Image (cartoon, rainbow, N blue to C red; front, side):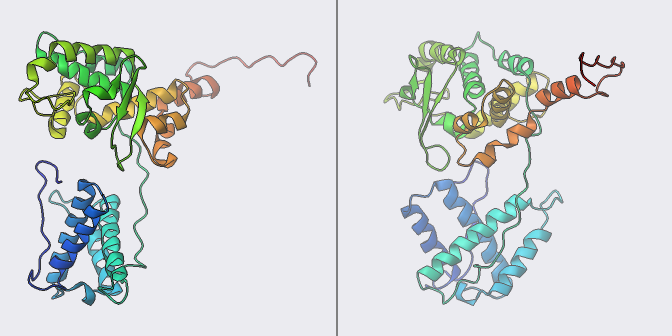
Amino acid sequence: MPRRGQKTRVVVGDRGDPRGMPAMAQAFLDHLRVANFSPMTVHHHEFALAYLSVWLAERGITRPRDVTKAILERYQRSLYHQRKKNGQPLSFHTQAVRLYCIKMFFRWLARQNFILYNPASEIELPRGEKRIPRHVLSVAEAETILGQPDLATPRGVRDRAILETLYSTGMRRMELTRLAVFDLDFDRGTVFIRLGKGKKDRLIPIGERALAWIDKYSIEVRPLYVRLPDSGTLFLASTGAAIAPDILTNLARDYIERAGFGNRGACHLFRHTMATLMLENGADVRYIQEMLGHAKLDSTQIYTQVSIRKLKEIHTVTHPSARLEKREPTEPAAGRD
């Protein structure tokens, strides 16, 4: 399902044509749903096909069978030259996602014999950019943000529990909004994340301090918010509904700005911070991969690059020109040339 505020686009064309873009796109999207792809994945494909259908219709092409490799190559070039409302080009990641969705669509059409050949089979996706997180909090900065909620109010206690959970576990905002009361094991100090990204479950540790704040929230605040029948969702809005992802983003961003750190991010800032601090304190990158729920180690290894504080310490200690004052050369060991 599309996120709040995100426009829903439809595939254009003759809806009465059983071989037209709207009918073929709808059949493909139904296939994705039956195959248990996530609602967000289905939305991404629908969004990509809607853009393609508009571009094709402007050139008089309304059926997938009339699309050729050369036409798709022209479309790929148009994505490269496309500009957003702010004048910025589409990121290579966005271009790759749209083209990947189109490749899947035409591959499915060919397998179902709706078209004679797959015109997208040889389309190469743009090479991905390996970007590192721009902002990561220090321990002191994280503690300052965690101290912002007003603990004299029910909302403040709830928000402190939320921030502590994000900081302790590094879970995604969608994963936090789906947490249930019974997903937490206070005795073992673990939290069970159900159907995370890629519809994968995982069991990860959670710190004692985060559990203490969750316990306080569960006893003092959650009963004030819950509406019968109780859905079992852990973090609730004052209306009794599960707290929405966008509300969670605004909540985290507001406390970050209140702490005086400007526009550094929101929920994902705590995810980056958790991973970086664990790495700097000696955690193996594979354990961090498990915490974050990354399918591939490549996704986690960006934190080996963002750990600049540790690298700075090593540079200061080991590089001869790292300090302004000149250090005396070390005396050679006795008995050595």
